[in-house]
Image (cartoon, rainbow, N blue to C red; front, side, top):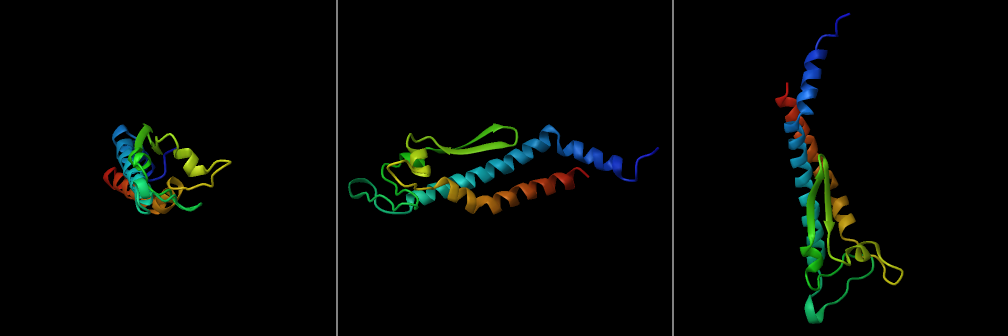
Length: 137
């Protein structure tokens, strides 16, 4: 029994899309999305009250106001494995600020940045997939 018309061509296209170069294209799109999230989070922290001696803590539920710069300067984007990108802050107190503690209400900065950038990250990945499909035809 023969395959339906176009099936072999379509299967070849899918194999090329899943090739190492196709995965690199998608990784680049995901990494660019991660950088957007990181930048958004940094802006949330650095847009606010004065740092240093006149530092004013943010209100509960609002992103933290920058004080020393450690939190914003330690946000990084890392490719963990193919098609997995992690955006995190390595400041020792970042989780306490993001999620709160029993003694302090949360001051989220990463989750709101992720949520705000999600539509653009999806567009970046969709455009990469579209280029792969078009170039693999």
